[in-house]
Image (cartoon, rainbow over all chains, first blue to last red; front, side):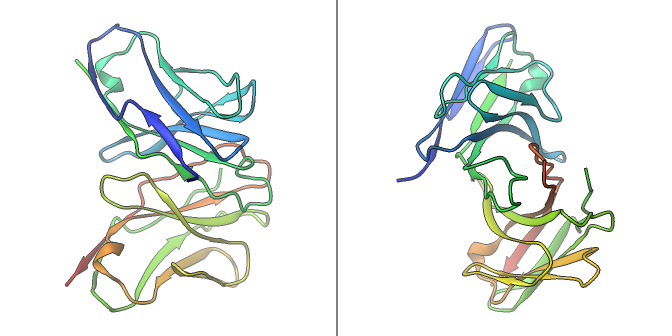
Length: 117
Length: 110
């Protein structure tokens, strides 16, 4: 089954303790991205990757790192998490980057709820 | 990036058509119009997209104004399962990022 898989689904942790949220897709997609969703603010893009070893900042990249060493995986790294990073996170992927032909539907994971105390 | 404007919320009755509006007055000629929806406790899912002509698929129809400054997502017969937040976004040719905005929360009454 074609899917985007995020792990963990839920995590409660403390300020300053490094954490990684994994994202994996099995559709051979070149484009992957991370979003955070907060009440009243909607979905905001954190980072995106056009292809392996190519990453770029979205709207809210501060406090996050990403890497894209292989096509299927795009982990989100919080080196020193803070309470303002408590949020619902989504990973998404598409075959190519969104602007290519304008017809690249995004496939989203089920989300990771992070609570940082 | 071109911006879209949507009402914060809308209500509909079950089995009636729903017209969800989106204003994008600063759209450029190469911007595609995409719609996504997010059901409660789920990630967003793609609904439909278009450039200039009206589009239909199994989920919905997309009506695009002749001047492309607005569009309407049409759900022909709303069901309770269609209660969700609907996002209208614009995607430009070379664009790598996506800007979702806050969307319209659709409530469907039985």
